[in-house]
Image (cartoon, rainbow, N blue to C red; front, side, top):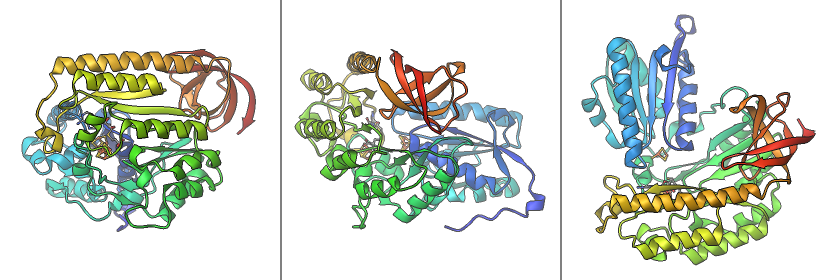
Length: 455
Ligand code: SAH
Ligand code: SF4
Ligand code: F3S
């Protein structure tokens, strides 16, 4: 990509940037890259939007609720601009991609709209807004997302980091807007990915999460020599990186080679997020997911055999068009069979222009609500049970920093991605400690330090 050169450094005045991020980790990573690009124009991130000269809202459009959240935030910063006319306001991310230029017509206070492939153009759009009062919308899809390689470091002192390994999605699940707002699937060059992770490791990062909508298909499209298990192998050779995670994994492309990686790569964490969406084969077919429940159950069994104790988490959609009571019951049955460690569950939300929008037999809102409540209640039971099983066990925890619980505690995670609070304020972030789990709660565990392992 074209390097964005700072303006004459002598003339750069310090400016304050605030980025509000909604949506998934992909957006979180994109925001880090926006901040890095804007640093070259003298912008420094601030925590308080009221101090900002430039506000960027990085949006999500996965469900109607995400859209409403963005709209209400935009309304609020529109108000702010009425009081402080000099602020530049930009909208980026998946909803910006979906709305395109129309966002400028709808929202007179908006200075620019940046699509998911155009993050590299933000510094230029900001300058145009400032100097020429030009309002721009750049939402064209490009072959490569130029900003994907911007080596932004996570926040100072972070021991965990996200690394984007793929852009877009080609799966077109019938309920999903992502392929339309993120464009075609494209894998990043492995050399670039490895280099980025090496830099992170040098700066103190100990755990990386590799990001893609379907990481299992990494490298497949271009017949690259390196597939996803091969990439994991290379990442695990990087000195300093102690833990590797990845999201998301599509069950249809979960290969035996990837399952084997859990056998042979100790740095790979004991956790996989494997979104199943529903327990009825009929519904899975309508969703265009490309697998059935028996295949899913078999893959989970293989994973548990390859890595005993592996945590399995998932996503559910309830109330997909045509989902009858019998179909929904199969989701509950599948939950009982697998006993997920955790899950995210959502009511089906029709999105503009996607295949499922045209399917008849929408499920009434109150039925959706009841089903969601049932899934979440059962999940709470299973999560509590899975956490209680940890009590008395010794586990390794990578300490990430001070706990939200209070100054006396530090917080870290187990390999199974469970949050552990430890009463030991002197442990540095980045240390791996062995703790005994003393108590279990719904969303976290309390650990007691046994001995300091490595630092
Ligand atoms: N690429 C990931 C999912 C990204 S979207 C994957 O395939 O696993 C995250 C989750 O949002 C999905 O797993 C799905 O459960 C949910 N989701 C997507 N579209 C939705 C919609 N229209 N309504 C409700 N939930 C939706
Ligand atoms: Fe959406 Fe399916 Fe792609 Fe995931 S795999 S992003 S659910 S289309
Ligand atoms: Fe949302 Fe876009 Fe992620 S729609 S879930 S921010 S890829």
